[in-house]
Every structure is written in C-alpha cells, then in structure tokens.
Length: 592
Image (tube, rainbow, N blue to C red; front, side, top):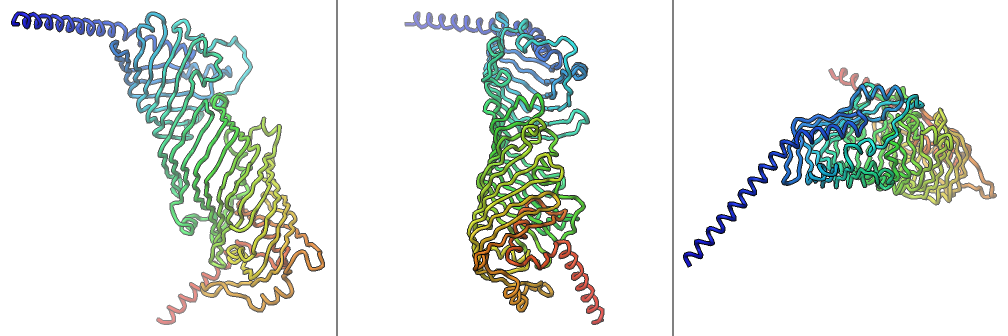
C-alpha cells in the first residue's frame, strides 16, 4: 500500500510538472508572438483605415495589448481624424463626403478574434468590438457636386481593402455612453449636442458577397441607437426640455421619441411678464413621436430628410397669450406652419403627418375683463399630406393638405380641411369645415372674457365655413344654423370688480339687433361674410378661430358692434391703472 501510494504521488507530480511546463511554454509563446504581432497588427490597423477611406482618415493610438490565449485586443487612447488636405482636394473636385468624423476614446476592446484567420487567411473574424465612452464629432460641410474632371476610382470599399484583407466579419459593435456633437464645418458652430448615447451595430460583414446586399446598411444588418434621460434648459432659460427615450434603427428606418416635454419655468402670467412684448407661452407633452420610412443613406450623403410618415400621438399642447403686454415688432405670420417649414435650413419631406388624439388648448388673457378665455380642441385626429420644403418635391406638388377632425370646446364635432400653399411668400392658405350640434351656452367660457358677451340660451344645429387667408387676415363665408338665441352684453367692472351686465343695452340688443334664429321663420338662410384683419402679434391658431368667431358674430347680428382690438384694450387698461395710481397718491398726500 505504501509503494502504491508513493507511485501515485510520483505520477501526479510528473503530470503537474508537464502541465506547468505546457502553461509556461504557451505563456512564453503567447508573450513572444504578442511582441511580434503588436507592430504587425498596429501597422495593419492603420493600413486598413487609410486604404478603406481612400486616405481620407488616419488612426493613431498610444498602445495595443494582444492576448493570444483569449484572442482579444485592447487599444488605448485612440484618435480617428480626417486628413483635411485630402478632404479639401476632393471638395474642390466635388467628390468629398458631406460629413466628416472625429472620434476620440480612451479604450477600444476587440474580443475573441480569430488570430490565425488573420495570419493564415487574411480574414478578420471576431465576436464584438466595444468602444468605451467615446467622444464623436460629426462635421457638416457643404460640398458642391461637380462633374467628374478626372478618372474616378469606382472601386468599392471591399475592392480597396481586398489586397490587404479577404474579409471582415464582426458579430457586433457597441458604442457605450458616447458624447455626440454635430458641428457646422464652415464656422465651427455647434449645431446640436447629445450626451449618453448608445449605438449598436449588428453583424458587420465586408466581403465580396455583401457589396450588393440591399438588406444591409453600410455592410451591417442593422445600426440602432438609444438616448435615454435627455434633459436641458433652453438658452433663454424659460423652458426645460426633457426626453425619456429616443431610439432608432437604420434598417428598420425608424426613429421613436417617447416622453418629450417642453416645460415652462414660470406660471402663465408670470412667464409673460418676464418678456417685454406679447409672446406665446408653450406647455407641450408628447407621448410618442414616431418617424417611419426614413432614408438614412440620403441624409448622410445629401443632408436631406425624407420620411414616409411622422406619427404624433397622445399629445397635449397648451398655448397662452397675455394681451396686456405690448405687441412686438415681429410679425407672427412668419411662424405659420408652412412659413416656418420654408425657413428650415435643410430640405425636409414627410409624405404623411399622422395626428392621433392630440389635445390643443389656446388661452388668451383679456386685460379688459381680467379673465382668461380658452379654445379647446380635443381628440384632434387626421393626416397632413406632402409636408415639404424640398425644391424637387415642391416642383411636383406645392400644396400640403390637412384633413382633420376633433372635438371643439369639449362639446361639438369639428371637421376641417386646410390647404397650405407651400410656395406662398405671404403665408396663403385656405380652410373649410363643418361644426356639428352645440348648446351655445357652452361658448360662454370663450365669449365672456374675450367677446364681453354672455349667451343665455341658444342651440346651434350646424356651421359650415369656407375661408381664404394669409398673414394679413382672412375673407370667406359662413352658414350658421341656430335658434332660440338670447344674450347679455357685458361691461368691465369698476376697480377690478367682475364684469357686469348691461341690462338696458342687452334688452335693446335682443329686441333690435340679435337675430334669434337662422334660417328665419320664413325659411330664408343668411350667409355671413367673414372679414378679419390679423394683428401682427396674432398666431396661426388665433387667425383660424377668430375668423370663425367673426362669422358667428356677423350671422347673429353683432357684426354692427365693432370688436375692440386687444391693443386698444391694453391701452385702456394701462391708462386706467395710471389713473388709479394717481388717485391713490392724491389720497395719501391728502391724509398728510
């Protein structure tokens, strides 16, 4: 038993010695080959980047660590930068790319590389590449495309590297927690900045079989990205911008934005009083914004945005205007939707804009009544076709058409078609629509503060309107079917008191002016003429509802009573406040 035990120990010692010798041998071999491979691999990486970009890019790094046992490579302190001399030469010839890239990262990890495949078959095969906390600058340059004056190298990317490598296959490329800046190359101005961006490139394959593979995006099965928790303060420090997530897929041709919010920093009146002139205050919450059918290649090559559809759903938009503030010199006609579209710095085409249950609330504060009046448009649903400022698209069709339906002031159905002239310099557009049955008393939250009228009774059967408009105002016709109308005329309360009824004038109005029904008892139908001159400070939405409001006033007989402009109301309020301050000062001085 002792002999056998001693023999077993010798065998185990012998095996352990052999194993240790193998480990040391493999380790030494790995160290030797690593030292030999490091300069070769470094040279190959730089050669592939240079040849693959036709000398437009070069790559530098501090050190490279190679582990033959695990088949991994780690590269430290990497800088990928464009050769500006090569770029400028190509730019003069009209052959340069629109975008250049500068990439810095502390560490690049390449895992599970088939080392011997590289050495024996000139193939790069690996599981994945991980870029840790990179800083990426994407630089836009305007390049005037010129006819070829020299013989152009028409070789594909694979053909450019084929003498060095037979194939490249990477299971995945991950860019984690990147900072991304979009820069104007002409003046170095920062156009956009994104922090904490994650990008995933799946199944990158470069060989002779993928040159014409239309299922791939720049040789990858997919390029996707995610941005989470975006938060920033606007330059004027009046709004906070928040986004829960932004995700996108190149082969899926999608971008989805969830939880976008534009939050005012102050309550409505306090916000407006921080400004020197009248200006809309926005409070926006977008549940989801989804682009589909995006041509990412066209954007990258030509800086043109084209999407088959843009869907906006579960959205609430609140707009507030304080009419006590002085009107600004700027003309808000420039902010009409189609006018703002014309001013975008890049060509944009969205075949179909889809709205799904969007809620819009437009509120005005009237300094005469010292009350707010709100127009609510809820469940706004429909499509807008041909949203574009692209000259090529406008050459085929220069009209955008919105076909929408909604619930107006939470009481009546609204159907409206708006036709925008996308080439008009004066913001020309037309709109026609239909409003269904409505108890006119439900108009009081709007009529009382803004029109100084209270409706006691009245039933609308339907409203049909047809209007031509531009930034100067609107003209059109309206047919308002209603009955049993009775109103009160209101006047401003003294010393800040609530508005009061003009009793005798209300009696006269209902007896002599107000027409209590349409059609009349003999069957005659009155058609009202709409004419509204838009103040420079009035928005597009203001122009729409004020045009309808004017048509309703004309139909019921209030058209002969002039509408007081917000500017005149404001001046009267300012004068009265000054009078009160003077009287208060006189009382104080009298007591002394």
